[in-house]
Length: 64
Image (cartoon, rainbow, N blue to C red; front, side, top):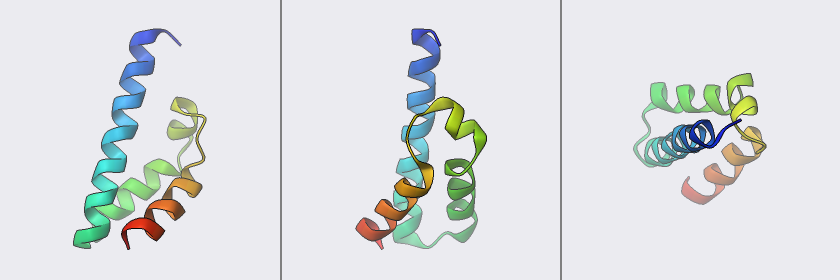
C-alpha cells in the first residue's frame, strides 16, 4: 500500500476511535453500533493490523 493510502487508512481509523470514545460517554446507540461494526469488519482488517475486538474491549474498559 502506498504512503497516501496508509495515511488515509490511519485517518479513517483514528476518526472511528474518536467517535467511539465520544459515544461511549454520550450513549449514542446508533453511532456506537456503527463504530463497532466497522472495527469488526473486513475493511478494518484490510486497513490495519490491529485487532478490532481488542480495541473495542480496551475502549469500553477505559471510557465506560
